[in-house]
Length: 338
Image (tube, rainbow, N blue to C red; front, side, top):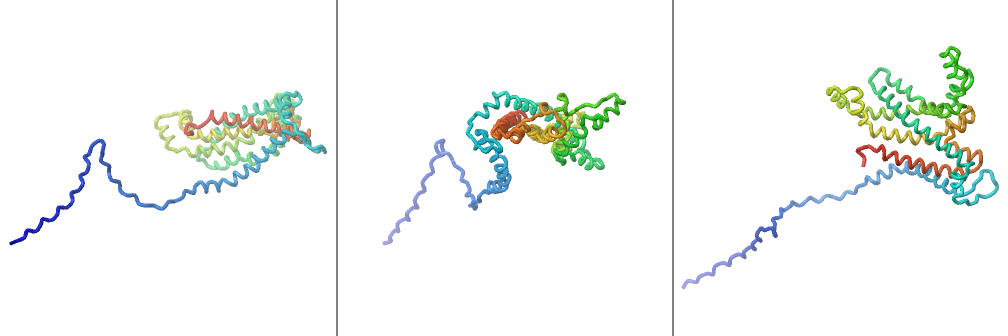
């Protein structure tokens, strides 16, 4: 009798995958990503190390003196006085705006600073832009001309003031008076350019523009050299005039550089001091017509020995300059900046 072997057991049936429905969508299988070693980003550390010297210098030479000036402005501090400093609170600031003996010279100095900045910033920037365009050419000995225009920047302001004191001297031997006398065939008499209230500030403005325009010129020249030449070639193919090329190619190409130059010139114009001090003390310059806030602060501290009042002047002036700089920054902000 033959025995019948039992049939092998059927393999277990695989579980049926759930039907593809909206509730069970098919998810693609993503390949496993290779495991990479985690690399720590150290760019912030490198940036911190490179900026440390500049930040340390800014804190040491700007932050600490300004904080010390704020502290001194709340005290009555006199140079050479045997009495200890006494706490004044806001008295120095009150006197600066309400006391006629102090508010008058301060407001006049602030007005002179604003007048100087309103004239120097557009005139010096425009002249620097014109010189940069003129010197942005491939000509022989162009480097020599660039050096000649930049040379006044290298001279110290005290030396420049002495040179212009000889030019604007009130006597017949003054260079400007001598030139005008020769041109007018002896009809031009001696004129006191520095002592007359109508021309004293104009003399300081001309002196400052002559000395500083070369610095802005170099910055704008570097910006002009970054504009691709293909843009000018395309503009010439479109028969654009020189003015159209300047308006639609040059100005947009140096907009960021121009904004920087305007802001830098504004800050430098508010801190005008050297030329005024040198010409007032030894050149016969009209003090009331050319008094600036920095000159007022220095003379208050070292001529009147009132350090507390001078500190209050510097604090108020610092806040005014910061506010004007912020407003100017927002007005002339480049289009590509957030």
